[in-house]
Length: 311
Ligand code: 13P
Image 1 (cartoon, rainbow, N blue to C red):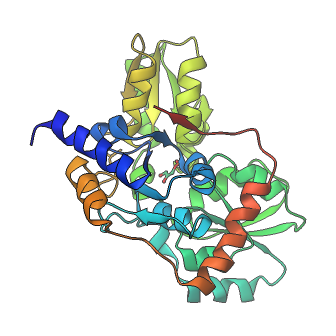
Image 2: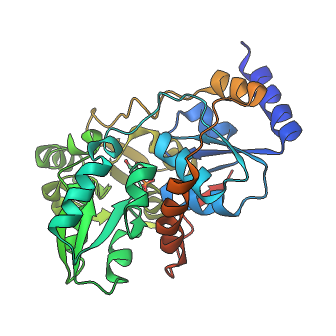
Image 3: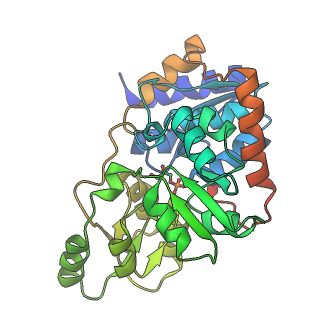
């Protein structure tokens, strides 16, 4: 179908249903182009909690749409492709977390937002890649069970005095980047600057010039004087980086930096979602209420981060 016609139809459907489209920075270019807002997990959670739209079309993966519903159950939250999941979020189940909690009864439980509603419901507070260390440092407890990303847990451990007990999960996409990749790209572009996501391995983070969430990497790229920027996160982020900085050059650290789940949404599926009001993402009310506590507590922690942008 003609892409301009498709975009016009989506715009008309959005108006008809008082809908907004939120797109994570990893979405396909065409999805980011049509979105009302793009951002990182933190920024999009804040938007989902505050929007006055009746319908949120969440272009990301399941835990993101679920978080939007947890924060705004009175809204209709649509996920264009229900198959878009997050293997990291699926690396821990409620029984496993319950057993770990019993092993460490004194520990506060901090869950990365890349987790299921059930895991959020069993946690004391959520965090995202942009606020993880701040959230951990805001807690009274000195021992923290940090699930499910071991690389992010390691990064947090380097930015807190508290004892961090990690879960053994990781994002396969970020974990695929190696220290050798950083050395290779630095050799190719010696005047380049390296920014990586905190889901990368500790040895990759140790070699980087900057570490941040996708939104923080986008901000960093704008602010740095360097004209060559080496990127250690999913390739979808290049859309905004190139759009904001037409005169700068961007180089991905690895060809592995592609999340196939994030690429499942497209314009046809967004249109179908708005036409049929499918696929609605919901969470059983008892789990939603408990998960809301963890997400809302995170949002109450004072931070000056916004992490999203209106297109
Ligand atoms: P951000 O918090 O940077 O959006 O990252 C989310 C994510 O899923 C990274 O893989």
